[in-house]
Image (cartoon, rainbow, N blue to C red; front, side):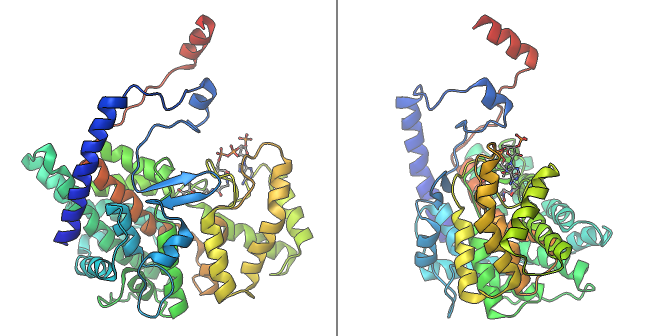
Length: 435
Ligand code: NMX
Ligand code: MLT
């Protein structure tokens, strides 16, 4: 893995010098004002983080190192005979800022395959949970159990220099990413397939091997996994999973501890768990109406009922986006090509036709358009992965790519511990009285 690591370090050193110059010359430049409402309302719109791997535009959606999702689908290397990008390539791009060659990507695939062995005590920890435990709970516990393997934690204990942090964080990140599919597949097969586990196939790419260990050998499903694991990888730095990983990492907690924090955040229904909630919401709708193809009128009424019950319509809305999420569009394109007649897929498309106007009419929802989670479950279900409480684990395996590439950058750039200022309402009242 030497040369990718060396390339990353070279690029990070240049960037580090540029940042020093930027701060020296423009450190006092204002990038925004903060209002009291923002302080109370989830810090929405406050610029307060640097995340090099991707940038979100509220109208255009995500760009990874400047590349949109359609551009990545076109330009990133593919598996032999495949059309979707290999997530290994996206990881390389996020880490180095450069579009990888086929050889770079194959090198990463081989490295991850080589490092994928999961120690037995991690499986013991999973086995200690009741089978009924939520897959995200098992996933978080397993990542925490893997922390025994942290090279960063060991090196820190032995007393390394700050200048070496990035190296051990990089090594831990690569190993952790390599092992996640095996852990996730183990949880899946334990919970839903009577513990009949499938051994990894080291000749396959990261996504295809994951599909294989889950028990899906259909080429269409492997392609879906490559797309899925690419598009869920990163969404700039302020989302809960990325921010939590970065925050915990800033205390020099190692990548295993930091990523666990990200995953406990991803497990929340307003964040990653929304993909589970979407498919449950659609299935309840289908069940209540006694049809797997509800009409647009029936769907519209169901949305109104959901709102009237004081619940959110899962898969819709976003804290930053103000248009249809391009990750939704990419999945819609995939579905048009591979499964346009699927009943659940068609229901997702019908929800898309009626939901935005209804959500808009409430006058309070800032973004009435679908996000990534509105589509993903219907595609997984089409290929037979019907256990919706597992869906967030898939999101988590993908999210590792972005947040761990970012963690490597955090340490390479020597970012400090994160510690913003908080206030009390008493302080706020006195402040406004004086101003
Ligand atoms: N259905 C019903 N109400 C909504 C929705 C929705 N889909 N989206 C926002 N609202 C409400 C929100 O609850 C808030 O109500 P109140 O003032 O009564 O508290 C109001 O509209 C204003 O919220 P926004 O400023 O539009 O949204 P915010 O930035 O606070 O939250 C989400 C963003 C994504 C948390 C929110 O849109 C939501 O809860 N969506 C449904 C859950 C979901 O799909 N989450 C997945 C996001 C993507 N991901 O994977 O992380
Ligand atoms: C994400 O992918 O993290 C979600 O869209 C949430 C976000 O960006 O806030």
